[in-house]
Length: 189
Image (cartoon, rainbow, N blue to C red; front, side, top):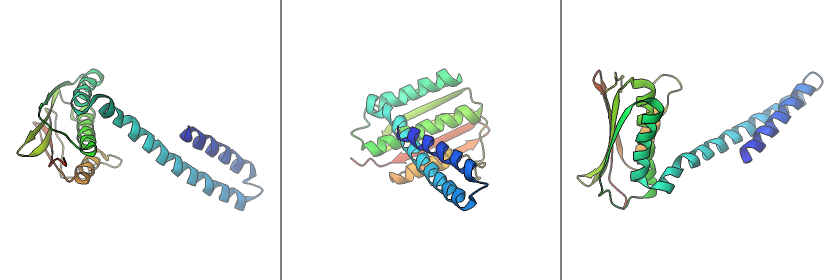
């Protein structure tokens, strides 16, 4: 509702700007500045709403089932064979850590589906050597993991930021035989 209200208000403001632009340019500029401010506020609200919507599988299903469904969904939408292997002994994980694991897995699979031209991917989640380890592997054509991503592509940067926020590390190895995304973190609980 807040987003719809913001967009409606912006549309009204822009119509008013159009109406008075030729007669009162200063007032029109002021109204335009207000519309820009409202648009930025609405964008923030949209991002918060998307964040809330995307996190709901964890709340509804728990981490294990949410990851399995993520793989199933990727198979259905993109025709990619996705195998998931999740250890039974992950332990009690902090919700912020679970969210990071889920979102990194989601972004890694999204990248495979959009860019790798892969036939298969695996998602492996387990506890190893006292750390939670998420590994996503594909058989796609790979990319330059060390180079700067193209303009507008923020997925890898977002994964790295999520890893850092929870005190983890994200390593990406990519080549002609595919890509491996490895996220490791010491659990908080």
